Image (cartoon, rainbow, N blue to C red; front, side, top):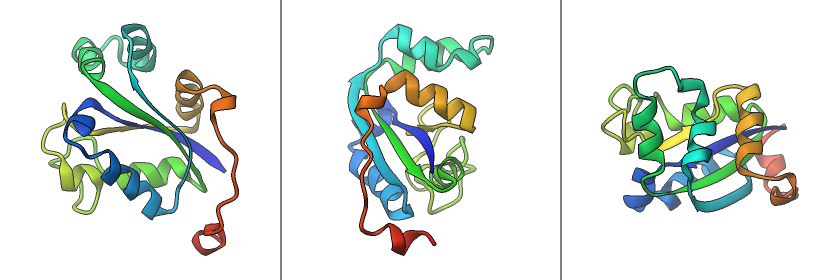
Length: 149
């Protein structure tokens, strides 16, 4: 099974969309194996967004993600990264398809509600940045045979 990191960003928390966002991933069939509510430190934000350090929007990205609490989650499933990214929708909410989190609930790229890992390599790095192995729960879900073959 593949794992992916999902963050409900400060705008999603402030708009009271945490439950709705979690529900979208549950309904998709992904399995939650780790979750925490936290205020990201400057250092954690810089590590998390290090890939964008040379880009002009880096500082505003770090400032925004540290401006309020986030919900960090690890979801697991077959092709979890692709499934999560299609559930979230395009980075720019105006371009995101209806039925996606961003397409239904977002309006601007700088307030796009969620972050999701974009590759297996980044997922591993991001999961390890936010969670220790002891914080991730291996559990049997009785619905799994009804979700995947």
